[in-house]
Image (cartoon, rainbow, N blue to C red; front, side, top):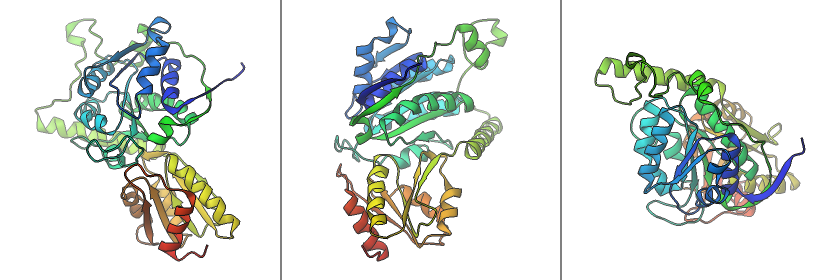
Length: 362
């Protein structure tokens, strides 16, 4: 079958990919720089073609609780927002995790804290990778660097969420959400029938059958011993995810003497800086985490054994650097370079940071 190639924004690609995945519902609220997700879904009107529900809720809190309800019935449901809106969703995300429900959450990050700026940021790293809400839980966190990955990660996020019965998040910065690129759209998947849903999600609260066999979905457990059992089960699931779902890309690492670690759009900037450094005879490589959780600790640890220094480059004050330092375990200096407030660095600034932190001659 001939590929369908389109030119579109990252946010628009999310909407197209959700429809083509066969998603059952989207519940969201507009906020820059991700509003095109909801706007594109409204324009495409999938309720008339695939039966997908699209609803602008009255608030971010309402949206995430609609996702909670839809997920409890086994439906493939999602939401999207930007940084302040995702903060409002944290209680509902924690409930989803505690209820072992699959759902897809998209965060197109903007600068903060507070209302901040509508310009791009990567300062929600802690919020996404460390749980964000209350309790001991994790989200599977995918960090796209291209519009194609924005498209592909919708299916991947849903599939992982259902595989492990846990929420997954696409953590994109505002650059990836707003930029336009060529993208290959996936073929249309049929939505699951009710019979398929019951077979694939026997845990779902479907409201049918004998009352004694009716599933109850809740995050509440007043018996401390049972609550500890629940938490131990959650942690066992997270260990399986860490063993099986780490994703990353390496660039020029075979002979690298210095390593850059960057994700999202910043990795693209760093790749240009690395190519310029290589042209000048400086052996620099990069590891780009694709899953921010689970984080590629083992892979960075391996590379830490061969390089003289590691530079993390982020659109924040230094968040991912904490995980990189854990991976490096003190064997090599780890430094940070970042811009904040919506300012995006250029490749020359990355090279200057390498020189400043490690005395690399440019």
